[in-house]
Image (cartoon, rainbow, N blue to C red; front, side):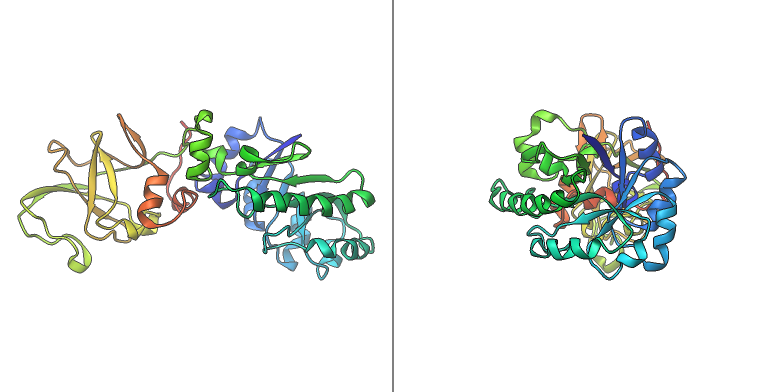
Length: 334
């Protein structure tokens, strides 16, 4: 069984170069989404890469030259994939990229007319994370198995991967040849239900997002803070300016609702988050000064700001929180 580390989206925002340098000795495949990621990956590793997203026609030859194994999910582009190693995507009750199971026999007839090497068949779960009801996931697996069986008759050595971190935690088939590990690699659970049921795994988040106070000052009572006059100080109070904002991936939805850590204490975000800065109430840490560390995500002392907490505040999922951290911000492996 082979392990594929999913490093698309700048390794879920953690930094492609940093993550590849750590995982290079222990994984068999990389899984990426597009040609740009493949180019960046090839400067770091020569291990096999599953490029499962969309590749423009004019980029196919380069992707093949760079050793990617490509996803196929239609007949129109088969002629352009000559010489490529490919993985057939089965749309097993997901309703996204892929061919429908009823089309498998006809598709294989067409595939036989082209010079491509079919090395894998794969699918993806639709509803296995945010629920404890695995009825749909089980139906997906059954549909995928029937489709895979048809392919296997014609291609006995073909690999299979109906896979995800959530699938591995719940019902991923032991017959899989490749395990595609994504969010779990970064110490995050795919959902709150899976964090509850699989807490014994003791996953620990990898990312710690740190900034520093650019300025500390005292504002008088009833002083406005930030754009739109959405916050007025209820009393004279110390505030700190954090030089991060929505351009850096710190969501504007955290205006007047988020918290950061300074001196091991939770400090509320006050006023609107701007493009490159926001203000925090430093009343809990009166000794704070410019250049003190600010933690936007992760631990400081006994306190922790989690991706799940931030996601709940802005109405999204934990995947989005690290992934949106700007690629321009420096990363460092500790």
